[in-house]
Length: 404
Ligand SMILES: *[C@@H]1O[C@H](CO)[C@@H](O)[C@H](O)[C@H]1NC(C)=O
Ligand SMILES: *[C@@H]1O[C@H](CO)[C@@H](O)[C@H](O)[C@H]1NC(C)=O
Ligand SMILES: *[C@@H]1O[C@H](CO)[C@@H](O)[C@H](O)[C@H]1NC(C)=O
Image 1 (cartoon, helix red, strand yellow):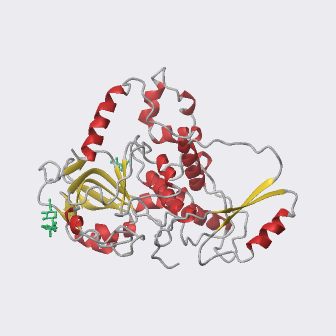
Image 2: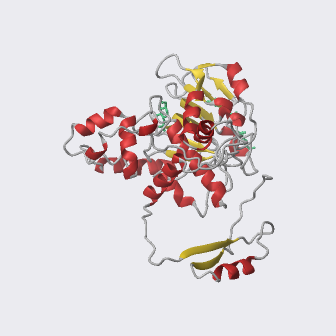
Image 3: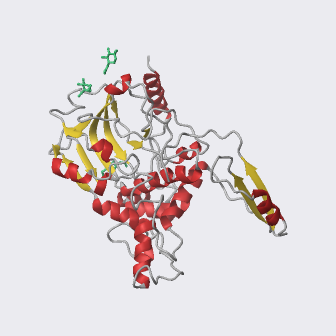
């Protein structure tokens, strides 16, 4: 018996203990996000209104929107951009500055991704496959999609930041493919800039892969496939997490949008580990998969999402040319709320007035602070600071093939 079969049996057994009635455990969100959730899904709000046992009654009657919905008024939206700094030299007016910031670094960014969504492979009947992407294949989603991992079984070199994981026809579905559009949109061909390297290989299949039994494995739960940046570095790895969170909003269309009973597959053959790996608990309650999980097999995904990537051109937030003078992005605030909520991190008010300053000392060949000790010494002279220097000596470095 394979390990996966075993897990499947365990999951099946566990299902019997979940209570059926008055079950709101699927809605597991920060308190402050509930009113936005219920406004996004009026039918869920109605269900709660009609159920005496619903614990969310207080969150049903306030107008609220994230900011990317078509009818979202600024007074109801999660955030309003603040731009106390000058706009001159960047854009002509204050309001252009505010709009630019909202589109570059706030929920306006999600709004624009949602507007860009286009069909690349069109279903003719509900049980057909479908594939949709935003411009340049920065974000894609599909239904009843087959991915053929057969050839990975004989691949000897490990896979990371590779663009040849799939060859023509290794990904496909039973739907009407717009080949011209597929080729046009596959124009950001680089490992972490778009899904072009993978999705350009998408082909129409002659028959329905799930119905006709062409897959060794069928994945029922929503699956997020992630191409990740350097996991050793908090800045880079949180770029992955932020984009995953933003992608939940880009795809927001079903009440289960924030559910964590899903799968995440890391598009690498290295086993994933990171100092920051606990953060995945904010997005999934299941073990992570990678490219070893299904090598040698053909897999069908009923619901698959290819999230926004960490190094997109003008993406968030690596090398983002963010407009000057603005602050308080609601998207980043919501991301912070979401992660803190799921990791159970609560606020511990500090007991004394001293500001704690921790200098993270990098023990690498380059990018070292040469006068670190002098810096710490100078900081310690300030009676308002409590200063600590933190070093990490057993750092396990990932190879990092990008120049930046
Ligand atoms: C998967 O790929 C292998 C090797 O390229 C091929 O022989 C097989 O027919 C493919 N399976 C499907 C269902 O297309
Ligand atoms: C993998 O290699 C083995 C041994 O050389 C061979 O028999 C098999 O057909 C190969 N499989 C694929 C999918 O290429
Ligand atoms: C993504 O959006 C599609 C289309 O609206 C939906 O069918 C699917 O359930 C969504 N996936 C997730 C994981 O929410």
